[in-house]
Amino acid sequence: MFPMFQELAPHDPHNKCGHHYVICLDLKNQRFEVLDSMHSAADADLTTHAEFFINNLKETWNRHYKNSKVQIRHFPIEYVATTKQGNMTDCGFHTLEYFAKWEGRLVPVITAATIVELQKIYTWNRLTNEHFNKRFGAREFVEEAVKKVIKKYK
Image (cartoon, rainbow, N blue to C red):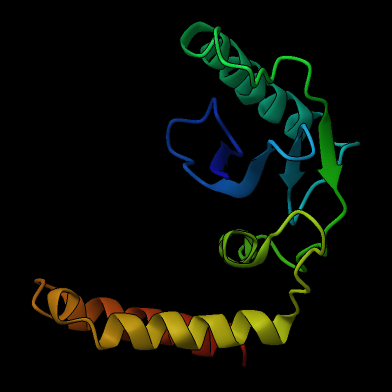
């Protein structure tokens, strides 16, 4: 599995917003699988971005593993139907769930409640992380993040 980051405004040097999605190389089923919580195969920005990466991966594989009995240059791309996120901010949580649960068969069901639970888990993990808490500005970072979450769900 490959985590992907797609800049949403690549020509704007001040806008570094982006979108996370996943590309999976499925050797067993001989295909590439794209899991995206915002776009589908009908979205040209997604297909262009994913195909660029996949073509480079195929070329690199061929260069370094040309004598391997496993060759991937003929693998098709499957854009897996996933639950679409309801906003522009939760793609990272969807991506983490794909990494944790994707087995090439059942797409994880990710709901708004799942996202809230993940936010709680990651917040707790960060708050109880000794290395994080020793960093300068950790407390201020957490306080600002909590304010944003409270504002978002009011």
